Image (cartoon, rainbow, N blue to C red; front, side, top):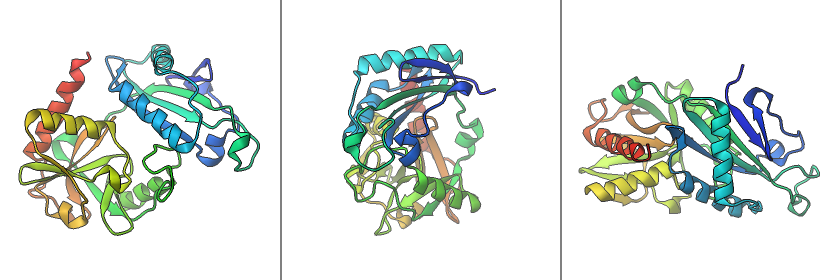
Length: 288
């Protein structure tokens, strides 16, 4: 039985019983925006930042925003409580809703709001102790070259295929390369490189998702005197890095010890990555 709870347009349901219409545009076209959060002591970390980004994604996609942050926050809290779980993987989604089966936005004026509170399954401790392998992929992203660049949309087919491709090569995350060969972001993560004792990460202007965990790491770096430069990265920057790590809400800060067939430095998680992870986890404890 699927554990957890789902809130759909005002109705709380058990996760295993949750259903949406086959005519919902989120289902038909990936016409929706979403956010993923991780709870600590049953409270979503950086919730307001996630809700700000969700609203921004809806604006980019021209999906009407029909609620307030306060109201949505209450829905999220209610769904978490109804889940009965010790900690949750929380997904908040806004779809364009049910409408005639065509691409005309003028006929789609009733967005749907869904909130999922499902079992949290963070990576095992070995991931942080030993690091992971990643692979580069040139898969195109659905929003590339559109007004929706930077929005967190549900159309993840490019990332799905990229991750599948990389897993066939023994990797655990795909790093997407842009049209000129630059490394932009992971399939479900942001990427950082350690060079000369400081951090390098692609800029938002590269069309990346403005990751909440990414921003938290940038804030922590500024507070702890760790230099950060946002600039284009290419494969050789990763291959020659002292350290590489990826960030995401559920995985936090994950060390990367191999990119494609290239072992990074000594093949072990490096001290700056470990320092950033420790600082991040200390930050999550502040809200407890």
